[in-house]
Length: 372
Image 1 (cartoon, rainbow, N blue to C red):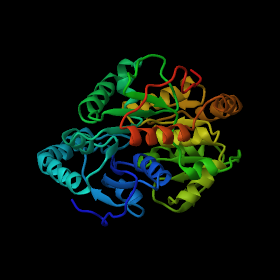
Image 2: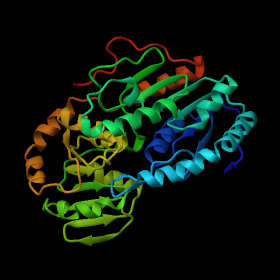
Image 3: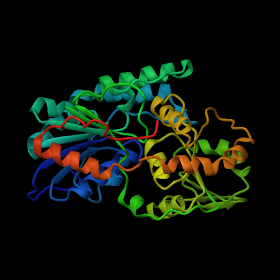
């Protein structure tokens, strides 16, 4: 474990920030917060994708975390067990390294986005720790769980409760608000946190479809995507070619957001970040949640429940889905216009208040109003 660059400077507060590095969503959220609060001094602990997202702008320390590998659009259970067995063997050594970072950096407060070690070390050092993530929607609110999703729900609750719930306070970002459940005084539900580039982007309804998937699973969906008859721009497969109405594009932030903002609708997995960005830009969504990740199922379920799009389970979508989905685009868009998909200003204020006061004030009655 080593620093990618040396920290220096005199910020108003020294903040150590643990970021789950699997995928880009957690790191993009953390980067958005750090960019907005430049007078504070940040040090990030992260791994894999988080290092590439955060390392160019802020001091970062590589810090492995439990992993959830995905193969063929489902959690690879055996691979996950083997990888995490190795992680737990090194847990004590890794925690000792994190303690060393805390001792050297001397943070005033800590923030975590579903990261394992920073909340634990914060407790040991008596430093308040604010969790900002979406995953705790599973544990702080009640949900109707279909029998088929019960194993993944139990696994998600176990992981969130026993591995990632050592923080002292919680901000849970979400494009939906569950009908039941209580947060308590140390947790608040807020609308999504969006990249500035997304907020600044003008939206228009073009003819093309944007499809995104971070695994090779979409190979199974290529016939499905061809059936739309529309141009389909596909991101996430690290390819650059055209095949009929399908155009594969390598990821670039500017190019991706341009194509997202000008799309007719979006086809993607069940990740909260992309779904939130699509809804903010007024785009209906067809969501294929990754099997055995309950949080993704929950996102796709509420997407359909609120009339923002469709939730599709399984790997063999019917050819009639796209025509029926496109017939409802106007209604989906009308439903989306009623929603609140940007909580940036509220979140920035709450984070600043936490840094200054080392706690979160209880929510006001009626805050975060969303259609149910």
